[in-house]
Length: 289
Image (cartoon, rainbow, N blue to C red; front, top):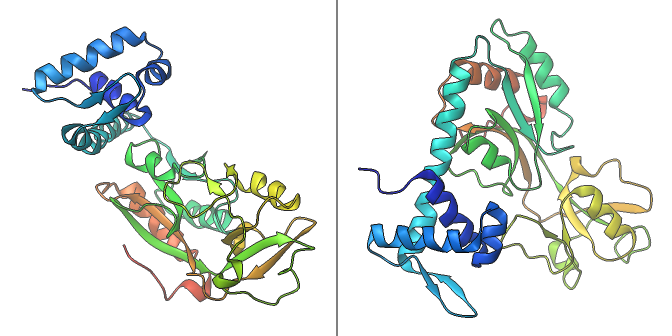
């Protein structure tokens, strides 16, 4: 017997994310007393406490930590099942590709042109994501394939193939102490302020939070920070900014990714076309799959 409904999991995950019943209730657009009551019902039914509560703090118990990890996967699986059922009933469903704006290393047009020559090609809908949620699109079924950057995006549970590998560059104001260098090492950036990317936990940045490359460029221009990005996301550099190669930074890989459980021929056809469209220098480096 199923002991929890998907709605209850959504309630629990909102509280687990916010660690505050008021903020979680506002996020869910329900009254706080109703949310508190729903969580207590879940705890009673499961026979374990999910949260520790005090007047100033809400925390997860070990049972709550376990439910947060597995509950999120369960919700994603339900969402993906619904999306795929709907798409299976469509006469000729479109293929949906997710990427962040500008995050294709200049390969998107070539990939689409190559795919259009496939005998089973379908219309491709382009979806644009935020800085860190492309993997969510693939896991919950909102997108079929995606262009991701490794090692920055979490590829757990996703099949993937490398399309392009490139170096990373430091982006600095044109008057910066490093602007005249032909190259730098990561140690040369010690003491510099780097951005914190919204939605990407565990980063090393200490500067202001940024949500996209445009915002990053603006803050670099006014001297608030510097940045390190894959070269294709920067060139040509905006006026007032300079790109300096970082010789010892791990290379960035643009990868085509899809849910590893997705065995549909339409996805396989798109992957085949994308691999054919890779630049010649990258054709011998298929990367993990």
